[in-house]
Image 1 (tube, rainbow, N blue to C red):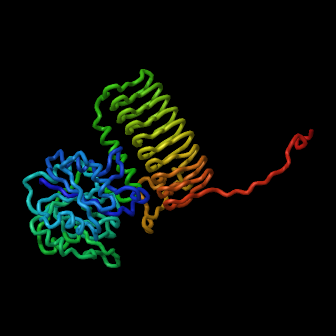
Image 2 (image 1 turned 30 degrees about the vertical axis):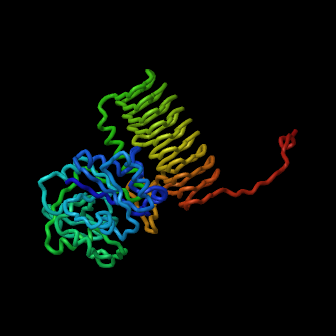
Image 3 (image 1 turned 45 degrees about the horizontal axis):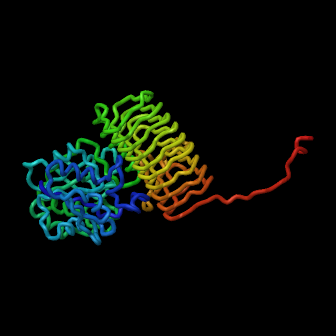
Length: 455
């Protein structure tokens, strides 16, 4: 396989609030854009040309991300009726046979990717991921028997299915894309599919006509980042993978570790990065360039931190967390989750969840992490009730936001970008984009003095 198309033209509405200021494929995972993992792995496996199909709105952002990669081009898709339509638009009349087709929001392990695209296999191929731990109603699923696809269903009620992670079309499949139906053709009774042309719908017709489908199954976790809590899952997965590859200390030029630091595992420090006095690390660490971790910072497990960030002054970071570039985590702040680039956490705060880029969190802001009933928080995504299997009680703060001192964000609450949560606000429901919320209080002034104490 010499050419690949990465589908990245979707609107990403389900991942609100993080798809409002960036395409979903550029959401940071362990400090790097999501789609960069797929691009780099494809290039390392010998793919010579990568075409990223992106919406006109975000094509410039994606082009800038890969400007140093001449093998990567961006195809603008002004309007798309679904993944089948996006693929046809990106190929612009070229036959799709033999071209790898990938979802830009899916993290595929390099080993699974290598197995899928290895030479010697012929005909139409699909890469499938078991839905054993997922709700089948969230995906288009394939049913397998003896290693072959027997049925393709749109968002089926029953489990035991596999979802599609990638395709390599065979000869003649372009015709099926051209006549792909606008409504998914194979659904269970009572289901209500939207008007959308899916590659899987064309594949369903291909299967109905008796054409063979070769199957490769993933053997590693393969997250499809579709909703905000999936960002946390993917970040934790990549922290585990990247830190798991670290076997000994790797110190770039100018990097240093103070003798008073207590390190349980090896670290990778970029140029001029340092671990200072009394730092406690109970795992492994990957730090970018010009990072300072100092003054009694406690890191309770594996951790990734981006360029030019400061972590210190008795702050506490839970294992599996990610701090972006140009961030400050200071003065007894607590973090469990992910903060994007340019986030400031100061003074006795507790953050559990995600904080979008360039967001300033006021002193003593707290995100609830445990409900009084020890249950999970029910979310709403595009109007539908959701029951996340992980991170349901996390908070999701959008990009370019601010909070005032002593703000409290209840489990599961989300704030759109460009929003403000005022001092002492108790946020109990999602806050729309570009919205401020503040407390109104009544005050009473009264006399007080020594006479109140009997003098």
